[in-house]
Structure formats: structure tokens, C-alpha cells
Image (tube, rainbow, N blue to C red; front, side):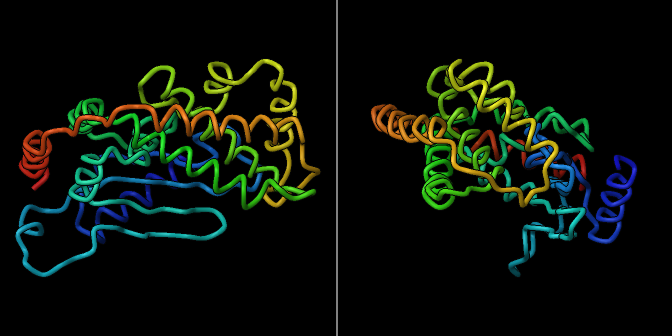
Length: 253
């Protein structure tokens, strides 16, 4: 599959006239709880020639390349990505910390270093908190629930706890978050769910687990209260992001 994805990235570069700076797996495969029928969520950041950014006409800053039962491939223009980085967009930090990397240009290291300086705790906390709360309310209050929705609620709660306790971007791999943040009494339930998730289809459902539901309810409220008590994060300097953007255009343009 690595070779197939590399060929698709090369095809994107040729057809779209871009240079891919970074490409990695996102979603359940990166998190470590893919089902047998999970697709490949490939995300990438790209740079266009310098002349492209000097046009007055508005142009798209996203490439949506493929979406089917096997692949979900799309990417962001580096200009869009750096603007989102200014606001500490959590999605960017997830992509950057993926354990499955398909493409990494030498210039990526400069972007990664700038990302470390741009991380804002409250932005990450509110993203993960809102994700967990919304998924819980919409999917986990029924008698029969989707197995994957437990992970889509539990993982962001553990990620938020990581930020509160450490002040850094959380790891991507689910088991790292479990080892660091999950109460030991909940481990047997999660280990069983993880085993089922890796062997069952994406559509698998099962009875609600009250112990997990109660834990998630408590944690959602606890994270909310602790998040609201934090002071605002300082904003990064646009100057650093501007310099980084221009350096990338010099290298790739």
C-alpha cells in the first residue's frame, strides 16, 4: 500500500503542478485502532510555484484527490496551513505527529519547528472537548452504540487531559494516551473494545457500556471546568510565519 500511495502522491504533483512538502496517514490507522475495512486517510501539505501566490484571482487552497471505499486523499496549500497554524489548528498538529509518514521533504523540519512554537493549549483543549462532547451526545446515549464512537469520544478526552497535565500537543497513538491518562479501573473495558475494534467491521454496534459512559460524562465536565480556568494563550508572531512561507517559496518556486 505504501507504493500505491506514493504513486498517487506523484500523480498529484504532476497533474496539479505542486510540490508535496509532507504527507501522512490520519484517522484510525494513525491512531492505532483501524478496523479491517478502514480506508486510508492520506493528508498532505503542498506548495505551488511562486507566481501562483501573486495572482489577484481567488483560487482554491485545497486538493481533494480521491474519496472511495479504499482511499480518502486530500491536502492543504501551505499558505492555508500556516494561516491555520497561527490559530494553533489542532488538525495540523495531528497530521504532523502521525506515526505513518508517506512523504517528508527536507524543508518540513522548519515547519515542524515553527509548529512547536505556535501550539496554544486552549485551542487544543476546546477542539478536543467539543469533539468529545458532540460525539457523546449524538452517539453514546442510546442502548446500542457504534463501537468506533467510543474511541471517537474517549480519544479526544484523553488528548485534552494530556494537554491539561503536560501543556504540549498530545500523541497520536491511542495506546500512548491510554497509558498516560486513562484511569486504571477503565483499562479492561478499553482493552476489550480495542480488540473488538481491530477485528470487527466499521459498522459494528454493541450495548452501551455504562462504566465508560459515566467516566466520559465526568471527564467532559472536568475538562470543561479546567479549560475555562486557564488564561488565554499568547499569539505567535506573523513575522516568523511570513519568513517561513517565503523560504518555502524560494525552495520550491
